[in-house]
Image 1 (tube, rainbow, N blue to C red):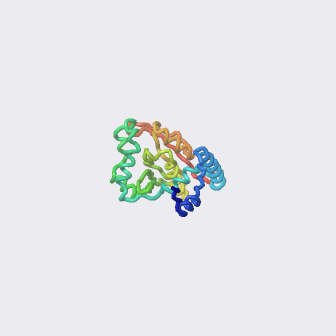
Image 2: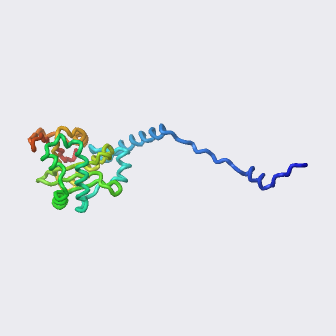
Image 3: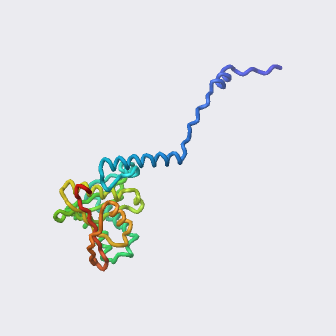
Amino acid sequence: MLARPRPPCSFRRHETKRRRPRRRRRGIAFFHRTQKRLHREVSQLAKFVIGSSFVPTLDHIWRQHVVRIRRARRSESAAIESLLRESFREYEQAYTPEAFEITTPGKHDIEDRIKHWTVWVAVHGNVIVGTVSAYPEGATLHIRSMAVHPKMQGHGIGKLLLARIEHFARATGYKRLILNTTPFLTRAIRLYEDFGFRFTGAKRKWFGMQLRSMAKRLTSAS
């Protein structure tokens, strides 16, 4: 008995079936090489264009699209209060109770600051992940209550906040930025120094703690 031949359609389906070409997978090493090359190009371009002490890296530029710096609203006072307490929680034991209470002001104090000072927030999506405040004194702009949420630290948000303050200070005619810090805030001090702040030499007691001042002059060369 002869075998039954296959239908022509099956043969045609078999013959016309083509393999899809495999896409070449680029490994993680290729990604890192490309990232480093773009990082160098962006840094060189930034140095040439702005000549500033703050040179945005590729990571900062990427994150500027997802982290927005804007003025705070009174309705965000509770969120800012929570952010400050969360950001300074790991240092609470190093503060005296009075100093920690002032460092992490409550909702009503923050509302008052938003009304009379200038307060910014860093927003990631719809969540406030950073904040900083400033108030004037003559030709000097004082920086207060700068904080970034612990889970968002190390991604350049602090530099973006400082850059926003400096832009505001220059645009409104201030000649100097000044802030106070404590010796145990070592990561914050490194950030300030990288941004051009220097210790003024002034030391004073503040609710049983040592307080040091750092300043940055806003000249055309800075």
